[in-house]
Image 1 (cartoon, rainbow, N blue to C red):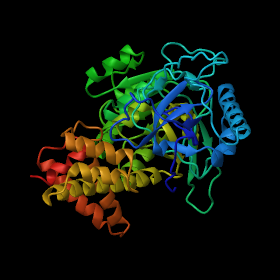
Image 2: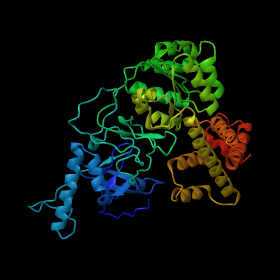
Image 3: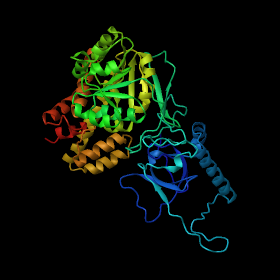
Length: 496
């Protein structure tokens, strides 16, 4: 989408953090209010409220071209009042010959000067955004997230009702995820049973399944997933090889399983999320493993990123005991997992996918059903191959800039204004420049994914030279003891 150039007075749809798009107007900020550093943004006054906020340009869309689309999707009472306020503003402006007249700081009918109210400035991580909450909605318990009064736009792709109107992903927010619904589109007969589902936020909270949920593996990804399952009211039994990691979730209301077999025997649906193919096999086939707890009708969902061969093997052994199998690897990171905004790729037993609906809504923003077992593993490896190669290229660019006497900060500033600008690029580069390699996605895991993707390419007799080159750089980073750092630590392979 072409860049939209905005001026003071323009009407817009502004999106703040994880909350819905809201009608507003670009206004001049108070003189004593500083613009956020490093962000290209505009100061926006929201209609129907007394709220103002700095909104990044990628979260702003012109009002009129998208008015009808927004009205069709957003039905909240407060939202309608805000739209009515926009219409009143336009009518008054038309009567005044297109000129705006501000009453702030002006005199009243008696010539007295009315004081200007202090502005309420919203931040992306504000817990209480009153403009985006309908007072008619019933309150949730203290442990539940605050619902929105209007439908939030989720993944607006080809399956969405307003295709072509796309918001950039928001940065990290401390607000809990609000409820989402699962919509499954018709099968595209031209593909291999590829079906997509977009999770779009709606009023109220997720209705958790009454099925008992098990979860095996509380690593970077699993911990965030379990936390969100619990927050959304699911009954969860957990197990982890290092049992101490279970303590926090027990305090949050989870139950403890002593072995994988015990968790599976106690639960209707058991998820697992571990590091690699060997760990996934050991979990199922090892002593007191998953297979020993499988009975007819039990569901097992493998969320680990592994190769198609491993997935096929696990599916066969689970099915041989009468179990139902679904693979559901996730695209994201620890931060995205904590936010409940993962992208879930599922394949296998379609009925299990449907039974997992509320779980997927709690942990992710979007889910895709990709047909037969193995398709999700293939797609996940391709995605991670692209991401890993891209990260290595960014690191190469940063170090080449330094080697040729160019400013790395300027390189990042230029990059953030171009077509490759993204939250991923910005966060990874900032972390590199700060020397912060705290793991959000382990370097050793992205290297594993590259290795598996290359092997998959070999099986398909398809060349993967870019991935192979990137893989060698990650292997060097591992040799420099960067395995347990974030994938962005591949940068260090270029400077040693």
